[in-house]
Length: 110
View 1 (cartoon, rainbow, N blue to C red):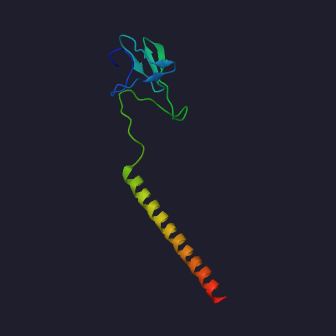
View 2 (view 1 turned 90 degrees about the vertical axis):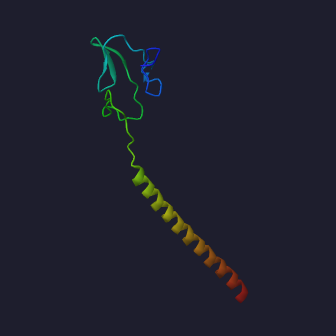
View 3 (view 1 turned 180 degrees about the horizontal axis):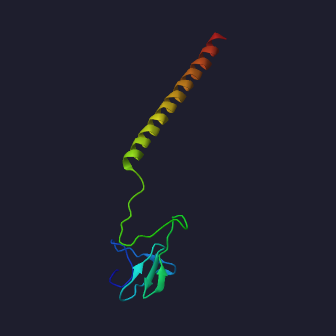
């Protein structure tokens, strides 16, 4: 919670509910796996989840989200794709040079 009593990330960014920022209740509260903020048995608000798969995305209170991308795998993939691009570029360049020679040589023979 931030100084205004609203739910926020550790960096201070406000966490949004269904109708804007979430004013946290005094006393005990918890967040269930659906993102509902519950205090004294009543749902205060629900965390707005975007980018997840409805019905499959779960909220875990007290956990930190980690990236779902392996930097090493993505870097290797990027290098592989770059090399394939370079090979295709070289093939196009060789084809262009061959066509250039063909056009210029045919022009001289005639």
